[in-house]
Image (cartoon, rainbow, N blue to C red; front, side, top):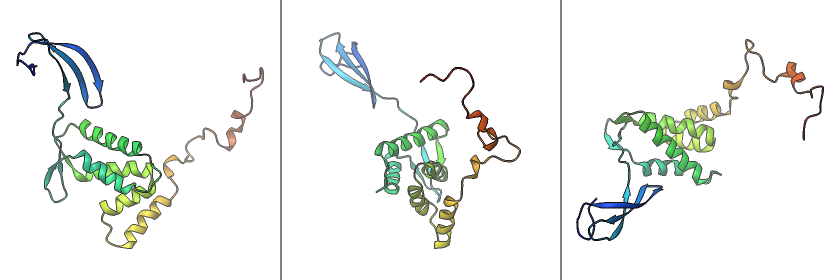
Length: 180
């Protein structure tokens, strides 16, 4: 690290702290004694998004956050939930280990998370992302949201953990009373 005063490359680290944007280091030049601060950040690989028309553009976190904020406007969602969603999607894209990612994948990631987080925001985002051509497509998407979630249903081949036949599990056990 070059000194900002004399240009010498010999310095020692006096203090080091983690921050939101990287590692903040307080340094002292071994030649002139001046102290200065450096900020070290990990440089991520550039992620390129392949759009639907095969045009390529660099991934922009701010653009992702803006689209989510528009979908969630006037919804009872804290801004931290939106920021966490952006962080999760960016992390997922980085974990893929690819330099190029199709925009459809990002759209599906966003919609799958929004569907759980807020269904109105999901419909807003889906209406723009899927570009509903008519009101029927829009109606189908809303009706699909209103259907009961069958992913948690118990089939006949499975035993229920706490069904009607398992009421004995809920009754107090014999012996000592439970501690309060």
